[in-house]
Image (cartoon, protein in one colour):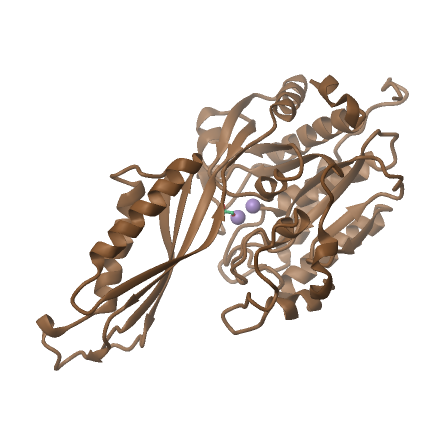
Length: 425
Ligand code: GLV
Ligand code: MN
Ligand code: MN
């Protein structure tokens, strides 16, 4: 491995270039609320990917879209070295912020640009995973699930609210719904995976810490709940004769909140989507559809909370109201790799940044890739702890700090041959 000397310095982040790219990407999908809306596989998402692919090409890298719609960026040397993968996502929630996902992708691009021309034992590769949020097509982590060979639904079984199927969306972005299996990476091909992300919570800011070394990522269970009552005339149906689906749904919402809140059965629980039919002022609601999302860092607690919710939903039934629930997603909590954690902590320390262990309450592609490779994650502070809203913000100096730690950790890993993995400790 070539020594880094004064004449031959190690790689360094170009902070101005990274910040400039982040600002440019935030213009793609900029919405009327001052946020960013780049829903997975939307025209804005595709323009965002095009921008990253163009920047990669300008840097002498090449980008291609795999069958599942992931954008994969590589350097010119592909000689079978084990891969050091870096990644995150470009899609956003509706009215999200400029950094969730985009930061990890563009910092990864900057790191790849720095490392690709160098002699390394691992090949650095960047992936912008498709549809991490699942805000339009309800299949979060679609791209990373495809990479790990864990897709459990076909592209015709997934559609957006307008009935556009994922098959059509995949074709439009350059993917290939007939060849999804080809997006899979074989076990052993990824020596390590690193993801840089904003924290999206308050811990780093409140403790005045620059770098979070992520020790684990939360698990999530998502349910589709239907509350069926009886629609009827809002003026003539006596109160005692009603089966009001929305009144029952309100009790469901409170049960979900109580499950995590007062009762502490899981870390957090949210009803994030709710629709009422027929949705007319003078008609008693006959049908409510909603989602409930439960999260916890412990797989057993998450399972027990799901069972408890089923019991509570059954208790809401009665007087002509029926409640059904179906699990649409179960994503397990995962620990990150202790060796990668120690590399990240050591490099942050060497760069002079304060750092601390942290747990991720948000989901990340890293937790899916964990089925295939050791994962490491780096967090930087989020102002006021907010994310998934237009106000999402991290100071420039902290954005650059996170990228510098990603580069240092990736450089340390990439110089080390995979069989000698233990030596990077
Ligand atoms: C990912 O953005 C999540 O919802 O945690
Ligand atoms: Mn997100
Ligand atoms: Mn994210």
